[in-house]
Image 1 (cartoon, rainbow, N blue to C red):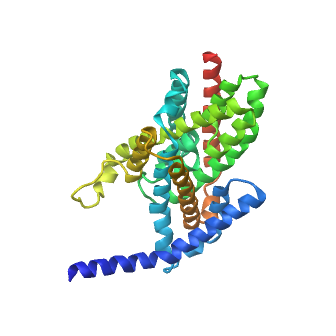
Image 2: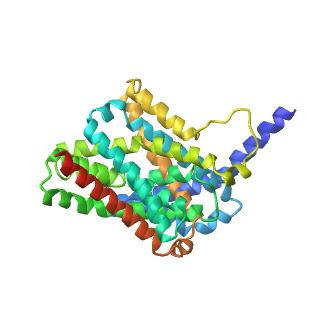
Image 3: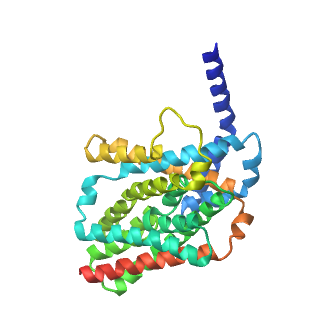
Length: 342
């Protein structure tokens, strides 16, 4: 009897999620349609269009589904990113390029924390800005936010990082190929520069192939290496957060088994391993990649619905300065490293 009541409660819970999930999916589809018609990053459209429906995140009929999309669907999309990466792709870069990328990522995350402290912002905002700039833009900010302590500013800080990373990534997509051409970088090193500095994957691909096939291929692989570092950075942040006194003071009740890292990171690593071992067909890899993009779009739309544009405007100029500082830092770091390596 108790088993029957349990499944009945679970089914009722799933039914309660559908209105909010459906709304997020419809808004995400609209954002993709607008992006296809007029150009521009679909995630940015999803954020802004979702924010226009902020009032729905408080409606009892849609709030549970919006919360589920922002937490479960979003994390699933991040985990599925692992299907795009293999160990062989990373090894093909060589140790010099790999060292440049690793040092650029680590130093940019630290830069974000230090500049945030100088600007009077929270350390969590510094991690969001540094991680979004250093790794893979919006997806990295969302992954880092998933393991940060939840407070009244968490959603607003995450939305700020996602919006600013998307905007700055688009600016970099247009500007950085001109910088590479002005510096007369060879195609290989031009690809390292573009793949090692531009925030989002899509913008890296566009910028790279605008300079030729070799630059585009190199930029894409370098960018995938940065995406591969997502699991290391997020795992490190997760372990650090778990050891904070404030976190342990309000720790949830112990369960029989609790993973030491978030489940979406486990999925990420498993997919990288399966893809690297050659156990994933091309069709499956493409399907998982499309599923990842769809989940991220729905999750980002839900994030936009959870945060009001008025609240975002009240964050002021400091987050913009923070994101600009981290973006300038990683660009200068990679350029100087390339000059040394050449």
